[in-house]
Amino acid sequence: MKKIIELERVNVIRNKNLILDNISLTVNDTDFLGLIGPSGSGKTTLLKVMSGLIIPDTGKVTFPSKQKLKIGYLPQALPSLPNSPATVMEIIASGFNSKPFTNNKEKIISIAKEMEIDQLLDLKITQLSGGQVQLVFLVRALVDTPDVIILDEPSSSIDTKSQSKIFQILSNVNKNNIPIIFSSHDTFAITNSANRIACINKKLDYHGTSKDFLSNKHLAESYGYGVDVLSHQGHE
Amino acid sequence: MLEILSHDFMVRALIGSVLLSVTAPILGMFVVSRRISLVGDTLSHLAFAGIAIGVFLDFFPLLTTITFSIIASLLLLKLMQSNTLNSDAVLAVFFSSSMAVGTVLLSLSERIININEILFGSLLWITNADIIYQFIVAISIIAVTTFSYKKWFMLSIDQDLSRINNTNVNFYDNLLIVLTSILIVVSVRMVGVLLISSLLVLPILIALQLTNNFRNTIFIAIGVSLLCSLSGVTSSYYLSSHPSIIPPSGLIVIILSAIFTIVLIKNNLKIDNKFESNF
Image (cartoon, rainbow over the protein chains, first blue to last red):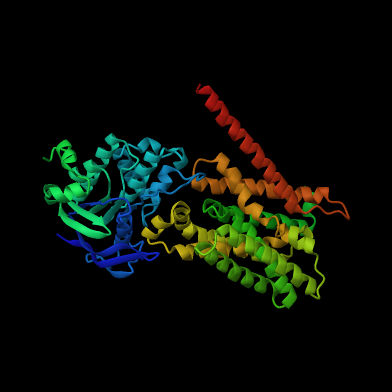
């Protein structure tokens, strides 16, 4: 097991408000880490700290395996592109860091087929629904075989059938020792896909296996994973 | 048509319009897709102040104008990116203050300057040196865009995703605004400061109505721009009669605006018909 991202005593302060409070966390290559917490608990900030978009006010973020990680990232707020002529193919192709586009067409088509959006490749991004746009940016995050995949609410606008498909694909990617970190309010995704859970509410309340989290009834209930949810998911 | 080519100033004007038609839409595409179209207008007003400073100091006017425009445009971008002021307020301040500085300095200058020519451009004003500068700038813009295309494309989609892809967002933003400033300064003699930003924006807006991908938008915009610029310059030659000279910039922008209106109406009619046929 290899350490990929390491956070040590990370604090983030915005407008005199403490957004992240002394968070220490390690992400390993086998992790499929689900990040849970109420709205405003700092999930998006934590994902941005891990991806290097936010520099913590104090504390340290290190990448022990490599000096510079190749990150596949899906933002929570997808870009608003009201008049963009960009096609789905152009947007996905921009996810490759260096290789020329011609070598990548096959790879884009194959991942798009897996996600069942191959018929959208020639359409303009403005012609798609919110859920389809989310799928496009998800494919973009996956397409360049990243060292780590960071997804902020990856299934928020997507139908249930596509959600289970996405998490199946992500599980397969994770089997190749590519860690996946995602935030979600989706109990199905958290309880069925993630092998590790981190509960945050500005502070890190819990970080461990999904199994331990779900067996700790008091903790699970305080994060909205009560008896009803667990029995519905078949975990009781 | 051949008669036009017998005049050196017309040949220069036609070459200049071809060079501008190729380069303005390339940068215009990224300016429009970053939703900073009004920046082009403000940059041209900064160029007016730059020209006035160059004329007033009478010290390498072109170099002074370019230096001032670059510094002012970088400051403009920096202020727009900061959270202290709204972008539109920053643009408004630069827009009006550069015109004020330009007007005052040109009035104080000992050289007799025809402000109309700076504001609207003139066929007679273009020199061989202007064509050489335009050519050098055109080559630079094509070369830089070839290397920066993917970065600028991604910046037009999302800044955070660009940062994740190891793009130095500030560098590529500055590069775009500096190149646009330089293009405006070297093209001002032909098109004038008031109308040059139309050449950055209108061909792109027309092409956006006709194309179905990002890359092709640039090529279609170049085609549209070539057609309108050459028609504008040629019409200006034939429609002008001494002492009334019609500036080509006015005609080029009128043709571009007319095409934009037609394309927009046609596309909206198409959408309406599609909508009705679905019911």
